[in-house]
Length: 189
Image (cartoon, rainbow, N blue to C red; front, top):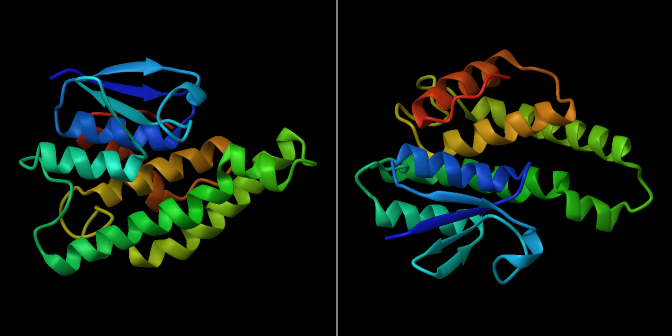
């Protein structure tokens, strides 16, 4: 099986997929592309499995979970799985869209890049503040006592916030450091 991850510089959705691939120890090649040339929607991430393209990070992560269930990214407990999915949904549908470059350019074309960056930082910080009481209650993991896809979503959006100017938060910074080691995606911020 040949797996290629199509990515673009700065794509936090692609980073989610890369974390999962590393955690699951699935061999892959990464190819940086003009996002308009990949997948049916013109965005990255996308993966190619023996020539078949799958796009959208959540769909890709679900595929990888089914492909390699032994290194699971979802808890066994049904309520804990629901909490993990809740966190992922909040990050994916609430935090992520408003900080997305193409959405901001469409909704606020009058803003210059520095204004967009400040707006992104403010939005991510506000949303992470709202999310924080739901996290880290049982352990250093986002939800429960083991690494999950929620850890990937939380760590990656926090890191994205820092690149836009979100203030450092000790809980999220500690989480980032721990989770990046576990996933094999060590990055110092």
